[in-house]
Image (cartoon, rainbow, N blue to C red; front, side, top):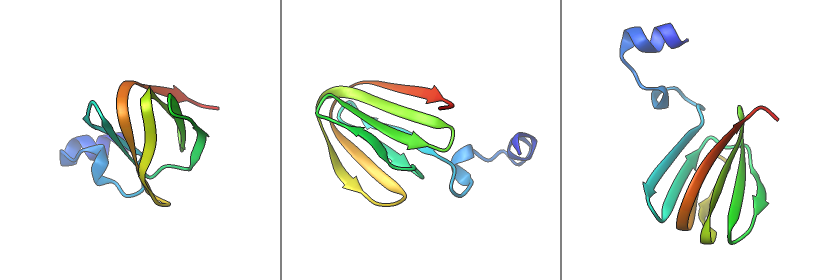
Length: 86
């Protein structure tokens, strides 16, 4: 798959159902193609992905938008951590 992407000069976001995490500013994170929220609090939100987890830490965090494929986390973002596996 990687060779196909490299030869076609397409980014990974061009593939359907590929997980995508995008920092939109210091106060907004977009996550697409997630597998659900596993931890939810005002200082930490964990989201399950096909490859593991993404953990967002900060202050006054909340879900601004959520659907089966897309969610937006709003608040003061301090860190985004990727945990493979699990």
